[in-house]
Length: 297
Image 1 (cartoon, one colour):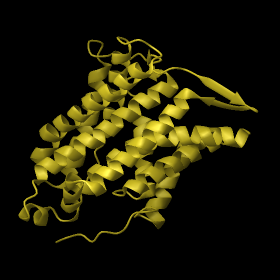
Image 2 (cartoon, one colour):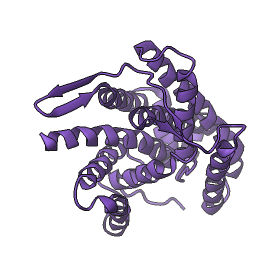
Image 3 (cartoon, rainbow, N blue to C red):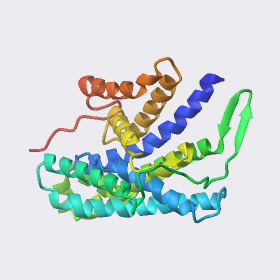
C-alpha cells in the first residue's frame, strides 16, 4: 500500500506542476520565449485565494470554487497587464532583452509582495476553503484535497485541449505559433492571440497556486520560485511547446520528486530534477513529445 500512497501523492503534486508547465509551454509555443514571471503569477494566485478565503465561509464547496475562480480571474488579468506593459514593447527586440525583462518582472513581483504594506515576507496559513475529508482503506490514506487537485487539474487540461484544438481562437493560436506573418495576412490579429495566450496561461497558474496552497497550507511571496523552476523542467522534459508534453512532464517530475523524497536519497530530490533537465537538453533537447521546428530566416 505504501507504493500506491506514494503514487497518489505523486499524481497530486504532478498535477500542480503540470498546470504551471502549461503556462510556460503556451507562451513559448506562441512567442518562443520563456516567461520567468509565470512562477510569480502562481504565487499571486495563492495569495488571492487566501485573501478571498478569509472572507468566505470555510469548508464549503461553493466557497472553495469562488476562491479558485477568483484567483484564476485575477491572474488572467495580471497576465494580460504583464504582457501589455513589459513584453509587447519588446516583441521585435532581441530575445535576450525579453528574457532579462522577464527576470526583472519576476524579481519586481517577489520583492513587491515582501513589502509589509502589500503582503509581507512572513508565511501565512492558507484557509481551508474546501471541505476537509479523509478516507482510509487498508493503510491507504486519501484526502479530499488530493482529489480536488487531481480532478481540477484534469478538467483544466481537457478544457485547454478543447480550446486549442476545437475553437477559432485556438486555431488562431496555432497559426500564429506556426507563422505569425502568414497568420496576420489571413486576418488574424497577433496582439489578440498573444493577449489571450497570456490570460489563459496565467489563469492556469492561478489555479495551480490555489491547489498548491491547499495542499501545503502556507502562502508566502517566494513560494513560486521552486515550483516554477520544477515546472519549467517539466515543460522541457515533456517538450516545451507541447500541451500533452507539459502535462506528462509535470506528472513525471511530481513522481520523481515523491518517490525519491521517500527514499534514502531524499536530500537530493531537487538536484535530481535539475540534473534531469541537463540530461534532456544534452540528449533530447526537443523533450519526450516535442518536435524540432526549423528556424525561419
